[in-house]
Image (cartoon, rainbow, N blue to C red; front, side, top):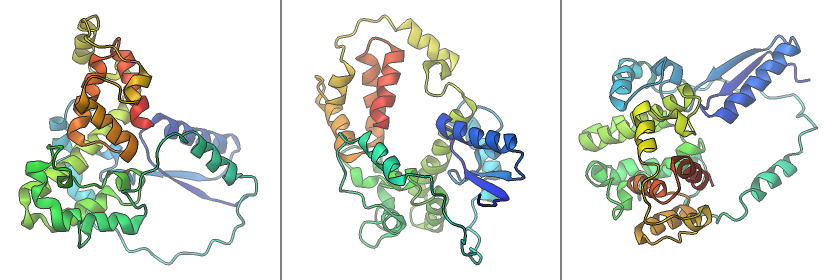
Length: 297
């Protein structure tokens, strides 16, 4: 109906997005449409398929491959050319109001947050603002203080903007490199987290079809989990108890409530949070299921 000759799709390593794109491509093939499909990995600095052609074992192996190609991709964005006006009529059969209402109703019991203003301008303010911008005001303490939950301002605060695409990791990395002379250790630590660790996670999800299952863990990890699956637990909590932070551990409860009411959790506490769920449930399968549920909600 729109007379399209090409379809450009963004990238996500997650199963629902990949299945949706496969369905679209399949429909185009069935209709014998002369539409070419292009996928662009704007989610990562280095496209996941260019960074490595296989599932990487560790940050060490991944880092060496990334460093060989990073300079090719970590470059300034090209100037946007003239935008051709869109003169096609929008499809009539998409009920946007119903779609939005449906999505909102699925999380109606999740509190709204008020600490984070959405949008590109707010994202750039969080990165480069004159008041509390991460690179302009707070970067120097990142290397030494980022793992201390009592020093939350040492963190970048950029996660929501990166997650929802209000700013790109590439923009953050380019701006950080410009300021490396101000605090080399902190900028290097930030780039390690922003690029290497973050894109290693995409590598795992892209090349491991069982990324959300215990079956997706490495063999040594599965063996350890199996060997200790029957260990005696001091506490066993239900999903509801965990979600409502009704445990005997005040530190864990505080971390869970931070995620419920603020939509985020300090990065160092996330490791503790997940390990305690494993300790407090009947086995690794249930622990992973609950952790994914709580994280995604």
